[in-house]
Image (tube, rainbow, N blue to C red; front, side, top):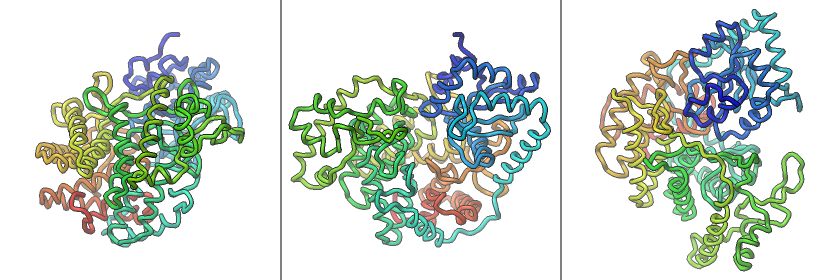
Length: 610
C-alpha cells in the first residue's frame, strides 16, 4: 500500500497512520484550502502515539477500506498529534466538552473549512454498539446534513465558537485571600478515598499536584489530616499495580479504585511529577521508601527514556503484540519457572501472585489467568525503614531483577522518542530537586545535560524556544508550557548546581516569555505567542490537569525569580498573574491545586529553596 502524506512527518503518532487508506493530511493550510475548494467539511482526529483507544479506533476504522472510502468521499481528513500541537488540542477539546459533555482521546471533531466545529466526540467504533453511533452510520449522516441542511450546521458552529470565546474570558481581577487554601483542603478531604487513597473512585489518577498542595498545606498549618492524605495515597500507589515493580516507573492511571489494574502506558510527565511529590514527601517524613521510589523512577528514566544527547523521551505504549499490558503481566507458572523455589515462595505472597491470576477481565468478569505485581504485604515497605528487614528486601530485589531480565526478552511496547521541551522541563526539575534532597551530584549532571541539550538544539537564533525535537529535527513554536516548565527546570538546576549560567538563562527566557505571551490588558499568559498561528481563540490555560497549567507554573517561577533576584517588576508581574486568575480559582479551588501551591508561596514560604 502506498503511504499517505503523513509519511513525511516526524511525529511517531502521525507516522503510525501513514499507511492508512484514509487520505490523511497533517494540520496545514493545504488541507483547509482543499476543503474549501472541494466544498467538504473537515474530519479532525487528535490523539497520541501511546493512546490505547487511538490504536483501537485505527484498527477498527482508519485501517478499514470501507470506512476509509466513506471518509475520503465525505471529508478532508486531518491527523494531529496532541503532544506536538497542544494549542490545537486545547481549543477542540474544550469544544468537545461543550458539545458532548465529556472529552478524551482519540478526539474526533467535524468542522467547516474555516475551522469552526459543529460535531465532536471521542472514540467511535466502526459499527454502532453500546449506545455509541458507528463510523459507517455517522459519516453518511454528516455528509447528507452538509449537503442538505448546512445552515443548521453553520449556526451550530457559530454558537460553539461564541461559547469558546466566552469560556476564554476572565472575570475582573481580585486580590487572593489565604482562605482559598483552607477551602481547597476542606474540599479535598471530602473527596478523599479513605480506604484506598486518592481523590476519586474508578478510574483513579495520581494527581501529584494535589499531593504537593497538601504537603505545603500541612507544613503551613501543621494539619495532620492533610499529611495523612498524602502518605496514604503515596503508599497505596507505590504498593499498587499502577507502579511497575519489576522495571520501575508509574503507569498512567488505575482503572479501579484500588490502584491495582492500570492503564499501562508510561508518560514522562507522570514520572517527573510523581518524583517531585515523593521527594517532597521524603523531606516531610524521612520515609526511606519514598526515597527509594524516586531513585527507582530516575533509574528507569536514565535506563530507558534518555536519548544519547541527554534529552528525555516522551512515553511508552500500553500495548504490545496488539494487547494492552501484555508486556507487564505474569502467569504464576512463569514466576515459578524463573525463580528458585525459596525466592518464589517469598515473592508470590509479597506481590499477591496467584495461580488463577490476581485480577479479573473487565469485559467478562472472569479471572484473567495473569498477575499484576502489587505489594500485598507490609513487610516490604517496613523493611526499608528497619535494618532487620534488609535480608528480605535484598532477596526481593534480586528476585525482581531476575524477572526483569526475563521480561526484557519479551516484545516491548513502542516508545515515543520525540523530545518535548515542556515535559523535559518537568523532568529536569525532578532530577535537580532529587539532586538537592538526596545529595546526588549524578542527578544534577543528568538535569544539566538535558538542559544544555534543549538550550543548544531547541532554541532559535533569536533566543526563542521550540517545542519538539526528533530524529535530528527541531521544530514547532513553543507554547506557554514549554517556557514555564523549562524555566522551572533551570531555576531548580541553578539551586542544585549553584551554576549562575542557569539562572541567567532562566531570566533571559523569562523575558522572551513575557514579551510574546503576557496579556497586557488582564494579566496572565496566553498559551500561544503573539505572532503564533491564529486559531479560533487565543486561550489562557489555568486548569491543573495531568500536569500543572503553564500559568500555575509561571506564577511559581515569577515568585521564585523575584525572591532570588529581588526584582520588583517580576514580583509585581507575579501579583498581577495571581489576581487575574483568582476569581476563577476561588470558585473551584481543587481544580487549580498547583496554582494554590504557588499562592501558598506568595503568602509566605515554608521552605527557603522553594
